[in-house]
Image 1 (cartoon, one colour):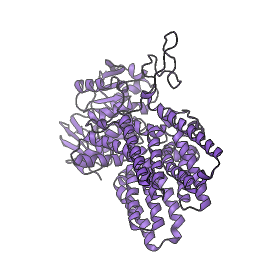
Image 2: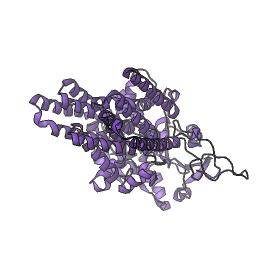
Image 3: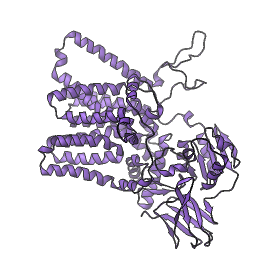
Image 4: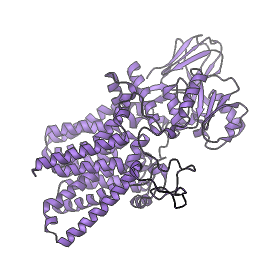
Length: 637
């Protein structure tokens, strides 16, 4: 068969394969819905994106003072640094007339569809032939859908990092082509793609900096002045494109907190991943460990490195450096100073995709060298058996994510239901309704039990601006982006000091009635929603339970509270703006909103930071001699 025909058929089969899996796990109808895909981290990213869209549209700024979350916090500065590409994508499509929710969803669809294409293009740029490059694309597709951490990343809402993991191969490959051919178009492509990679996710730096550095040092002596200038230009362009959010982040750096909460792994996780054992869901995801494709690509990549080293291939340095750094971060993070701040286990994602390209090169090398054809028949039989075994392992991983296609376990001879699942594990719950989690988007209905009813109840029974404390992080974020309530809750490990206005971050364990009362008063909490038991709140004399919706218990504050903690008057708050009227000019006013150094007061008034033992940031004080009506707004300087 003609090679072009063979390539076309293989390419078509790969495209259909990837599209079919995308339809199964995401669904094109879901992606083109005006309702944003929610649940878990998606809720956080919706809240971030919508607030930044508001800032860009109304103020021409990429961050805002957000009064709807955490009693006033700077949104679009530090915690959403991993969401910048998603925000810009959504804003661009929204400006073109696409509904916000659909624009948000289309980023997720684009992330799904882009994986095999990125791997194919990068493989070609690294000098791998077309058919072998298709193999790299196939490995990429298998990693995206059937490697547990890759799958967990995009399923739980870390779509930006999931896509960043494979996107990094493109600037890396373009820069490799530049140092090989010294052509301007490759330098321009490397600059654009490097800038986009960091816009998509800043942790791209920890993979691309070693890769670019290794390539530059390997070839720097042969560069002329123009080529050195082009390399500098690539770095400057990348900084320039990302300068807007870097400036916002560094201007708020004094608020930053420890980020070493998730992905904190060590050498034992390497063993666990190899044998498919889940050690810690907080580090590797609430998902069964499945990493056959990852270790297959790694094994083949090592073979490629050995061959390239022996042949003095120029690809050896960039791949051994990149793979070495990603592997060290993934499995030896505790031994690297400060690596815990970047959740080092995340780097198994780029580790797999970079390995996939080297793996395809290894397979190509075997066939191109004629070693397979020259091997004895017995060797080929052994290799065939090994391929069959590998195929079985890959298929077993895939079936974990495709429970719909696994026949159900038959009842025992006495008619009793099997005590274990199709995969040989115990049932997920007592009534045995959901023996296996379908890791698909959108979430199955039972994930949302009581959520819609709660949102509807709060919308009907609360007033605009009411403060609600909630212990469910995703639900807190959802209320913040879709309701008119002010929320104390959301993602609990947010890495800015304002996160400690969340009662459940401030007090991890039950506290005294006095502290509960102080908190409810200081933060003007009118409603409390509990999903889990919290005795200190449940017994508080200030709170009375008014509803129970599927285990979500709603409490109302019996005591009248106001965001005006001291002084008389009325107020109304919205993004970047707090309006006060009917106040007494002779009194100091204290507002239960976080102080921010860029807030300004008009007319003829000023603001000060009001310390409070329950707030690391402090509240807003407006000294006496202010007018009866005034506005506090974000001055951005």
